[in-house]
Image (cartoon, rainbow, N blue to C red; front, side, top):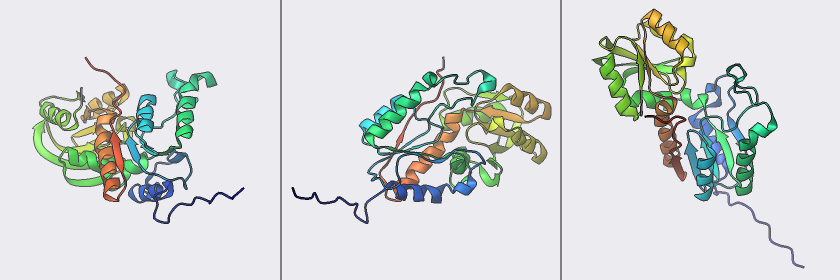
Length: 273
């Protein structure tokens, strides 16, 4: 019986390692928040890659669509698996392995199709040209400065209601909430892509530095209460909507570097009436 010839990748062939190296250049791991789980979650660095899929949230339906489209390297922003005990205080702790069946389904399909799974999160939020910069650009901020977890810039003066409508239009938010006097003028703006309202220090920074309004997503009651007490305005444009400009930017940067990259519209977690 003749020996079958070994199959080796050409030196110029695309591998997961090359995609990862590019992602590390665009979103340096040093920019990641301590404890944030990023990087290669499933797959092998040496496996070949033909098509890269970028998505904000990897739902089972989107994963099936990507697999059918021939995607073999997925980049996701939100964490793609349920984790035991992550939300224990809120009552959403996964109490048994049976509750994690979606994890098993996702991992099974990823392995069957030979798809590598990679996560970029806070490193891309904080990177030059990343989520926060893309959000600042989408809202046409001028004289933009980098601050912890966000960007600060100025806009043409508008009252809070008018500026909220401007944000809603620019980001395509299906619904938007704001905190503050609708008729008060807005000039200096902080943006924090994603769930910036979970970080009270951002509201404190706005208060101390004379920033009029913080634009982010997933507003919580405690943040609204603190902002009202300090006289800082808040605009909740949605976590997805504030991060989607950055996901588009990431896809475009990968294309510019020669990768066949496709952005998949995952949709948010909510429906609106």
